[in-house]
Image (cartoon, rainbow, N blue to C red; front, side, top):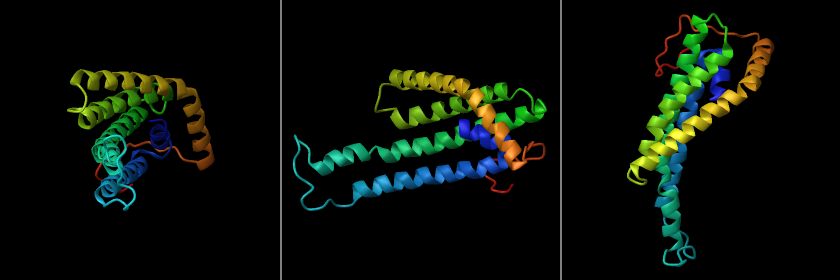
Length: 184
């Protein structure tokens, strides 16, 4: 959530919200393309047997999961990014812009929790054992929050540089925090 933190901290929740929706649209497009390429008939020489499966069957086996995973990813990214941005923006106003390090770590912890609780069950329930789904989700959560924590010094410098270069430092005091508005 490093990029989301930078966007929200510098430009505010409303501007970040537009970028998040663009990323969701890109993920949905990718899912549609993966579904389409597994649906169209293969070229005549493509569909030969390779160890018990045709090439098309092997291709569909790999890419056939993509729409489910990308759909789960789009929902998880949207929820996680919006939670991350909301927590960061609210904490910025409450702290009067102080303690950026604490705001970034807390917002990432909240956003990553939303992301992992949505993505892993939707993408892998019924494919993996439920215990594995939650073990992988918890491990990934811990690693990503740790990664964000390690990047705080770098992210803080980028935020400071962007605020100075752009002459912008938005405080979301009057912002409509609904994720479904595209207004600034």
